[in-house]
Length: 589
Ligand code: ADP
Ligand code: ZN
Image (cartoon, rainbow, N blue to C red; front, top):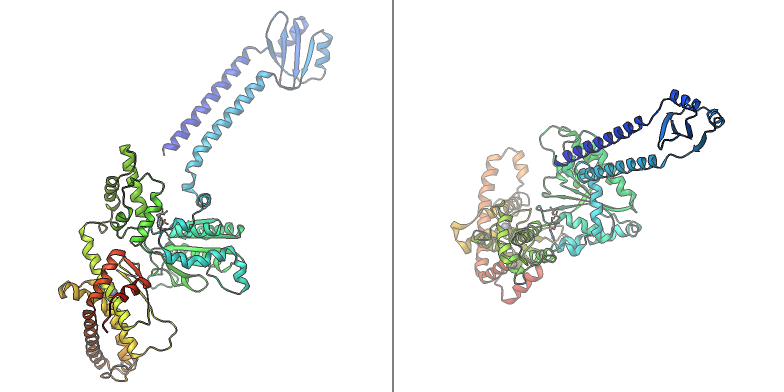
């Protein structure tokens, strides 16, 4: 609003000055004018010395014994010159304007240009807010700086899994030659501020191609058709570049699962925009190096239509950084700041559990602002300490005092339990990562890859799998006592139950229940019997597996402790690190 007032005032002043100037010039000229009638009179009286005839509407007349020129209406009469000459009057024909008029003109032009330039400059400054097209351009300008993988700390797995995308953008022909279908749509999912945008920019930077960014939320509350045409414009722009990265932040604003039963109902505009996006994506040519990257906080709320093969079919999690990742991020953002060399970034990383990259960046920035206010020479630990409370103020959970410690310890033992039991009973499975940093998939994080090249699972394997599910809760129980077990295991229990139900009623693997299929029995109307048998048998089997697992964990408690402690220290362990730990002492099977 401030800016608008400024523009209005400046325009008003400019116009006023101009009007006054014109008035002044006009008045001055009026005084020096004589009528044509008088002019003819003067000629007859032989009082005229000289006349200047120009292209202007006025003639300039010099009267004898007077210094200045008078102006007279120019009748544009070709015979006028002759008449004057016959009267012995000097006639000067002047094509150009007089010097003063030229000067006046120049001044006015200069004045206008200056004013126009100034108003435009102010106008331009606030333009991007209002125009989407400008937004796109903006992101391209920033590209000058060229983000690369070096600027993204942590997220090593994600970086690895997009390496081939960079290569594809650079040499799409190579891939099309082999008939390889590269993913054209990638989804980055994970909590806010973890560097999804940064990673997309880095891909563009590494491939050295333009980066176009829009946000799904820009498209909400638009008139029908506008969103779709913006999407088409965006892709047209990218296509003219041949190779590009298109980034769509907050894709969920466009492609959220349809809720409610009404088929085809819902938001027309959103659907049209989404359809335009999918249509554009399916229209890529083989040799075009264009990749669309979308970001969302949650993958599970997206419409399946978006996730189908040929659309956004590669999903990469960008999670919160672990302690090593946090340290790297702090180093990157501390580089251009005068940090007191005594500041221990490793220690700071340890104290910032659950911080996202953006929060860490913000922490250092707030620290720098506090230091700047003090006019100090550098940023001290106290400044960062003070900044800490500003940054975490909004999020109650993120406190580096003792509150977290218990939670973390519980998570550490829970995850260690899963990992250890996997290694004990199902070593053929790969534990790709154990972490105590929560992921979007749930509290804590434990990921195991069951060998995919399997057609059948044996009875033993299913039992082992259930044991792995149970191990988290059991570890909690062994360490903290039966009364201290937590809600953290709810998801595990659900999975274990579901698997056990199939074990009993689909695969006929339990002796007691025998070779009966649950669905067939239900169809036969045996609801009562089915429920009774299923419940009893499930309970029995689950208890037996529970005891088995508990014994195993108690026998290996020393190792459980070791893994949990290492998890607390490093927050995440990859398989090699886990194996190294396990080698240190004997396991009891
Ligand atoms: P998202 O898109 O996931 O919400 P952004 O990419 O917008 O997160 O991250 C915001 C800012 O936080 C980045 O510009 C960067 O300064 C910082 N940041 C976040 N993650 C990282 C990271 N892994 N490495 C370095 N800086 C990061
Ligand atoms: Zn668990």
